[in-house]
Length: 164
Figure 1 (tube, rainbow, N blue to C red):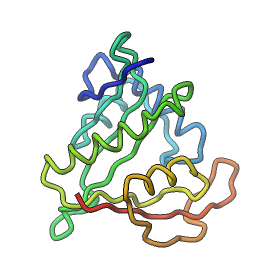
Figure 2 (figure 1 turned 120 degrees about the vertical axis):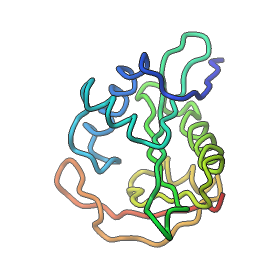
Figure 3 (figure 1 turned 90 degrees about the vertical axis):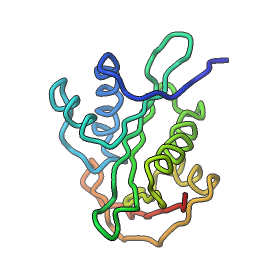
């Protein structure tokens, strides 16, 4: 059975991280971003995050997933963090997402955050919704038609949070 670990993104991981990120953007069903990353914009984007973690195969060092962690807001709301997660298509269903979210919660707490909030979990992202429920996140309601899907129809989004 493959063993996966998490580490801070290193420059040598950038190409694989960009590929994983871009696959989610191209799918058009989870991330709000529409622009694809390249080597220059990807390095800039991942380095602009407070923390970028990557999941990797402990035996092969293949990057299989990643998360970005950053403040959700500033000032009086600066104690709330936000994150996004991406798992390589052929590795989905191997609990890598769960590993990423759990690590992100620990990292957010280490960085002084009190809350981890997701602003736009697409209602059709059933695997994410199931995982967040399992990990104890609270749903904040539904924003009707909050996400424009790649095929140009709108889906609801369901913000979530967890105290950390």
